[in-house]
Amino acid sequence: MPLVTTKEMFEKSMKEHFAIGAFNINNMEFIQSITDAAEEAKSPVILQVSSSAIKYARINYLIKMVEAAVETTTIPIALHLDHGPDFETCKMCIDAGFTSVMIDGSKYDFEENVALTKKVVDYAHSKGVVVEAELGKLAGVEDDVNVSEDDARYTDSEQAYEFVQRTGCDSLAIAIGTSHGAYKFKGDAKLRFDILEKIKEKLPNTPIVLHGASSVIPSLVDMCNNNGGNIPGAKGCPDEMLKQAGETGVSKINVDTDLRLAMTAQIRKVFSEEPSVFDPRKYLGAAKEEIKATVAHKIKNVFCSANKA
Ligand code: G3H
Ligand code: 13P
Ligand code: ZN
Image (cartoon, rainbow, N blue to C red; front, side):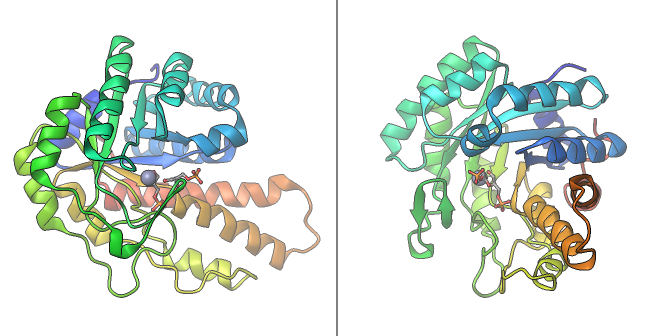
């Protein structure tokens, strides 16, 4: 099946109350592990690429590897630009064959965000590509923008309605308490489901996106720390909350940190348990298995997208 947009998978997710995992990719190991897990679970999946991933791996390499995954699987796969910083990056990805782009205008004021998003939507739609936009600010680090927890701005439902009407964006990323990276909560994890419900009331037919949604899997954090790592106090969104988000109207759940942890934990473990190993296939092979298991768990038990392909 060729690359698809997110349109149909989101329609199904809204009708059947499950979420689709959007996993960040940076190299072949991530692409193979994610798509193998999704194929085995018969789940639709979104592969997403940030501008730093493009800088690291080069856009044509990423696209060719994703095409190889598409050729050897049967599930719907969308290729998405994550946190597109400007019109030019979105246009580059659209022209290169991405089926979905995010324009992240959340760092701008409302009017500037509307104008930039509308410009991207007009171009993307003329090429059959869908657009995710963002309203509200996540706590933590969002690309170059630093938002402290005190500044965290939850998405306002009235503004969200106006934003979607005026921009014509296909899906909307909202801020309800998640944040990027491995340190999401100082105390107990808390998501504002009341805000999500209000937004869904206003926008029942707009797919909602949750960024910063890694659960920062404790066993992987331990595996890192027990093998020479130093990430004490890392904390994410518990699985039950993410499951509830999927049931309450979130259609796309973004995961990057958990896959980074899975890869790093296994590489550290091989290095510390078998110091004589220097064949990269040995430690990257272990990393691939851990990433695959992580994605499989989320698809089956948290996002509930298994058998929805
Ligand atoms: O939300 C951001 C993603 O985790 C991508 O991070 O810009 O370091 O690739 P990155
Ligand atoms: P995490 O850092 O929680 O994995 O979030 C990833 C993300 O939102 C990518 O856009
Ligand atoms: Zn994000």
